[in-house]
Image (cartoon, rainbow, N blue to C red; front, side, top):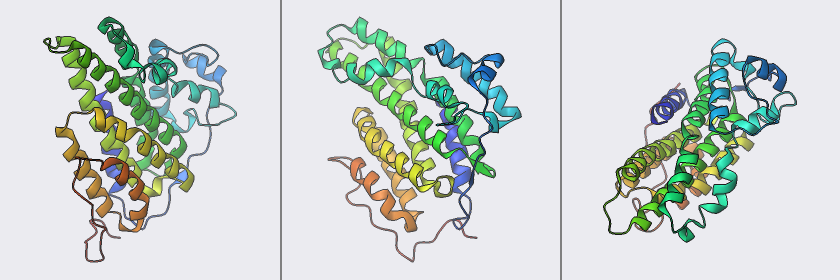
Length: 289
């Protein structure tokens, strides 16, 4: 998962480095296939439930397909492939975990929490790979803005629920020695979650990659899930993430107001430098035409 998300960050960096005055990328033409055509290539039909195994299989097929013809990837709201895309970004455990993790404080069994963590964590790697598929074209001539926004949203959501479950398991463990499986899950998920936040912020900074309505939706996802993630992440990760946010804001003075809602929800009590200053005219832009 971490390696895949790292690749997403690199793609976002490449796009972020493009000239600030460049026009918005063209939204990719919808040449996606039908569910039956995908099924012929090995993608499970969307009429059945996709568990971890089905999601991994689908993403594996789509990786090969995208290498030959990225325009044939499933699309959000498409008449041909909309049902397939919906399956891709709807992990089965989220329907349960969305409510179950909020009530995780009522769970008294670490065995049950361990199972919930295992059920959800298996989706993290294929979802990261899915986001990469839709991020790759950003450094080219077209974009999948709606699909990138949705795949980024689900990556943030999965990490948020995983951290809630893991921290509840740690709380139930009390003063006992933390078991190795829990220590390892906490370390891996924390690293992946911090990287996911940074990648999502980089993607948001790629202004030319989104139509306004989809950039607004991405902003909403960041405002909803990033505070939850940061509240669950180890304290040492906060300074680095907030400094990263500050840097992106200073590099985007024209869009400073767009960053304000995200800044407000991330700079809660005891976290981050007090009051980031708005970029001024004398601030040098790193990239000029």
